[in-house]
Image 1 (spheres, rainbow, N blue to C red):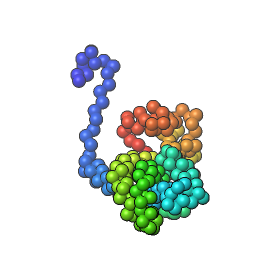
Image 2 (cartoon, rainbow, N blue to C red; image 1 turned 180 degrees about the horizontal axis):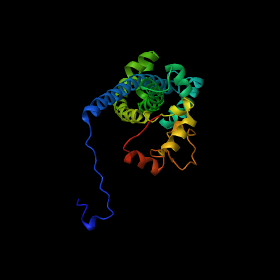
Image 3 (cartoon, rainbow, N blue to C red; image 1 turned 90 degrees about the vertical axis):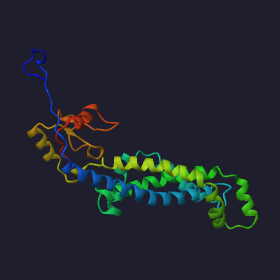
Image 4 (cartoon, one colour; image 1 turned 135 degrees about the horizontal axis):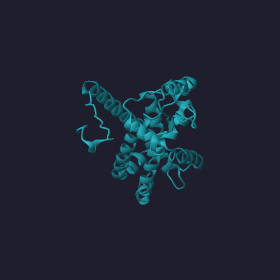
Length: 252
């Protein structure tokens, strides 16, 4: 662009700096490793406990081989309660439990714990739905031959539903990857460190706009002129734009 050209009057030219891959490269590798680690642990732990809950849902339901109204009701209510909760809300809701179990509410371990918890109930419902599709006649034939409930589960129920279960776990895998991306959105460090006043003074002294995560709501006055809101799908356009256009993001 020629700045002396009158056609360019009033036009601002922006030059984008080339990325420093010497710095970004190791960061990307570390981020990919963290994602794979969290997804793998969640698929193993959440997948296993979800499978157990799903089997109990199926076998303890009315007419099941382990029919038990109390157990079925408790598990069914728990699954119906936790499964529809958006993951970002689940992170906030499980803060106290995460702190007790993991010892911290930040970092890879804390995020993985919440992912395992959430995935367990999602897997449980998918497993139950796939097991319900099994032909009852096959199970009745096994029972008439004197097979024990454990034998029926391992030799009849699971093999019959293996194909649909594999497909269901494939969808769960994609959902868990989405969870790992959302886990980086926890935030709330200012509130935990009780640094609300310091954040306000910093923002006003430097005139830096402030974007708050879900867990950081209340750390900065919503009515303040420097507050842009919360980013993300349910956030505000100015907050998302600030992230996209910022040359520097200070995370607290």
